[in-house]
Image (spheres, rainbow, N blue to C red):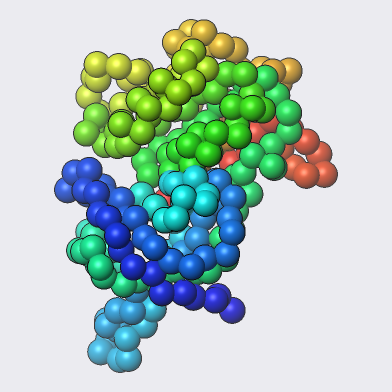
Length: 253
């Protein structure tokens, strides 16, 4: 059974009319960068019954041990939870699962030279947590962060990304992928297509290969599935504890 703890909103950031970030104070068990927990609210039952706790899993965007917990959320207009989360104000309460979960963490990765972090939408969250914590730079020489979105206005967290690139000059390659308009930076189109045709590697000046690369996939199931297939065609394998490989992944939607 989930152990729930009540938290309090200390900051709301609205990136646009659908994307927002919640910063929360709550007494949680220690967790690791890349993990997730569940956020919940007691909401009226759709059929008029007793209120129910409606909850969903969200990754931590913040590094551990900073005194707050941050979550990146997309509004689902007809969803049961996100319309209410979007309306929260500073000082409002919500519920969090006390114990975090998830294996998209640094300690689960085999050694490698380059780390490729490939995400779509709000699934960039766990990678921001890993990068902000900093240990990942001690384990890999070059880091590539790809973020796939439909429109350029969905490229949130630009101040943090600029700060990270200044902190680690020449080692963090941030590549936005925008599918529905041409953007002034990054690449146009989808991540798996840009791997398949070589544009992605040419853009960052690195090669995706089993000898030097570790890849973390986090995003919508279609991106994860198609990118996995493209990488497997290049000789990379899914990473399992019993059989180490190069690809770690988590569906996020």
